[in-house]
Length: 318
Ligand code: SF4
Ligand code: SF4
Image (cartoon, rainbow, N blue to C red; front, side, top):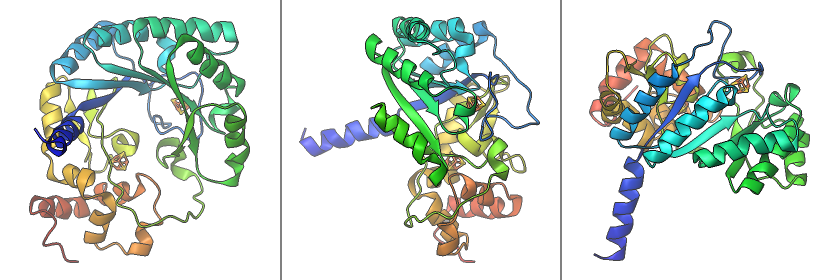
């Protein structure tokens, strides 16, 4: 087989690999003002551990190869999460835990958490950091957690959540000075951050394709994307169903077979908005997930887009 064909097959397999964000519980020990996972209307929910184990077996059978434990603060349930991670290892599923590092008060405490997670087979720890998180969690926790990961040989990343304002310069500089691995992640103007002020950003006109990894909530509702998708309550556009009535496989197929979702993945949200009649200069003014909200949480526009998506958005004129 020629090299380019092999590369293409590897690429296709990679593209087809199923991943999911797994919400074991929406409970959190802090209350960040920018939290997309919570709004004031929502109550805390948690899966039963035995049910979570069954679901992981079902996810493995459906070919899921990556699970990110997220939602509230997963490590409030350290022993449960360690058990679930260990189960994932048996199924050869890559695992990530997203945490606010509340537990890393000292180097010793940080070591006790990371060692247990490493021994359970965790692939990566993702440390959430921002000027909002750090009102509740002192920033040296991030350093303790990161250094502890390095000692334990556990892959980690700091997810630096930012609205790209100057207010964040000092927070970013701290990460650089501490020589931590980090990447900036845009704040999502949804959930509690819905009412935040948006400063003007200068960006190029980009495709804005979204990989759309599904999110399974503790209520057993599954959504076609994480982040803002579960908040589109006027249309429930991203809601795939509930595990009480559907199998994981059915919901993945629904996600992968939906024409409009596939346009979000391949054509990109920018082009869809342009087809839908949004001006180019309007499009570049929206923050992550906001353009989706504008188009897909409007019953009228969504109805029209869904119809056009079937024909490849070719005949769209407004
Ligand atoms: S952003 Fe994360 S740490 Fe902050 S309240 Fe939400 S779930 Fe908790
Ligand atoms: S950009 Fe759209 S599809 Fe992607 S996570 Fe946000 S709401 Fe979901």
